[in-house]
Image (cartoon, rainbow, N blue to C red; front, side, top):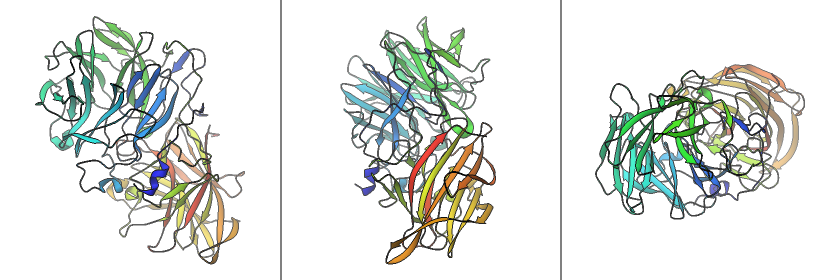
Length: 554
């Protein structure tokens, strides 16, 4: 196991965190949607006793398969990741995910609890369907198991039936299989780890109505088999429900949730869950462009055996809510939100952080001394832009508008070595400082259509005036430890503005506004990097003292 694993085996600390920029719980018994204004795409949720657990797609990011916990479906915390790194059976070459594989990797997962074990199933569109399990959800998960190899197998959901049989429904990715909008069911072995039956077509969305059917979830209730699935596409689609008395069908179908007259586009793809008091709820995503696929919660009413979602039922199809009474779980719980700010005081990395690829051994280390230290990595020989740079440590955008600031202490050893704060997506921009002779150069860099290998452009640059320096010895020479603060403000119109400070008190705006853009199947992210300009030079470093997310002043 790589040394970097110290980053991502965690001890769960129960602290009630509360965001300064987005809170769903209104504090009066109601909540507002979204319950999570962050890119937890393709969510699925279960209840085990009094606890709710959610997971979501993570694609090429590591660690992968986030596990979130709640007591009331409104107030959530990240408690673990099921995949410390992306190393799975059948993936060739084995180091495939050591470089950024944008849009690949962990697609729509499904979480289940069966016979004392937590299971997550997901589809990798290039390699097949996988499952991973544990009996302690906040502990270490077992190694992933390849359930079915193949290209284009996505969005799996198991059903552990009353008679001991196990079934799996999944969709097909047109980008790999050259067919899509169909759902098939097959039988698994008794422990749900291998396909043992033939694929059976249970629904074809190529009917001129329910195109782009995918993201299925399998349930059984009151003698009916139910398959819930989105249709109509990510940005503009709806949720359908299929039901049958036979696992292989034929299935009836109804549309049960659509945008209607609301502003919530594409309300679909998620998980159905009940509370201890008998209520039913549906957690799903909404595509919000640069912010990714943010998470909403809809009340569910069973009508004639159909799960009608939202409100204003019309022919079994509801509309999403913006505000609603919180789920009845028998108790009231404190307001809490996933972490955003970080003091970097712990010996483990905060759970909000992910790399853009499997982390390398010496990319960086957490420290109980009050900082996170990152070491400079070398630019590839044919560097064009940051799209293929793996050592980007980032977190999701978590509100429609916010200001994030970070305090850095950088030891830049060689001319051209650079560290900075980045907002990353298909387009990206960053503010950085690099060593230039005996001084330092401040720059804003912009890249449009990074996936297409478009070169970076310098939007603004200036020599850093009056830098705060401390001399220290390193490698037998005296070097300068530069203290600098970077800031970025993101506004509701998806614009971002960079700033910097040499003393942490007076921030100066720098460069031009930049329009934030989503990544490949993920929302935009913000975070850090440090790069060495020349290979085989002594590695520069940056210590991140703190990272704060707060309400914007613009």
